[in-house]
Length: 111
Image (cartoon, rainbow, N blue to C red; front, side, top):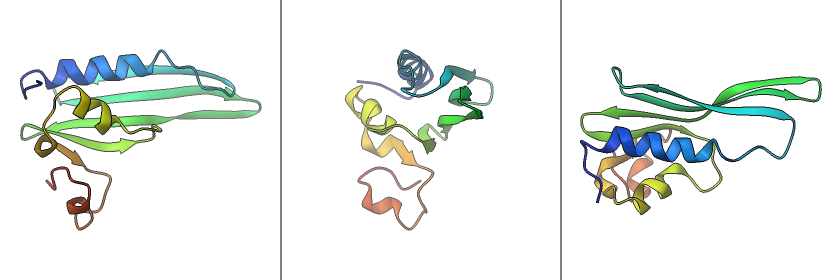
C-alpha cells in the first residue's frame, strides 16, 4: 500500500508509464515534467497533427498537505484509477479539477 512518503515516486512511475503510449494521430511526443521542490508533476504532449501544432498538459498532479491533488486529467481511464490500484487510499486523492461542491460525489477526498 502506498503511503504519503512514497507518493512522489508512485506518481512519477505512473506518469512515466503513460509516456509509453503514442497518440494515434500526428507526430506527438509525450514527456514528463517533475518538480519535487514544489511537488508538481505533469504529463505533457507536444508536436504536429498535420498543420496544427499541439502542446499541453495531459495530466497535472500536485501534492498538497499529504494528499494527491489531480489538477487536470485528460486520460481515458483517469489517473485516479491508477493511484487507487497502487494502494492509495481514497481519502488521499482529490479531484482538484472538479468544483468543490461536486467532489463529494466522487467517492474520493473533497479537499
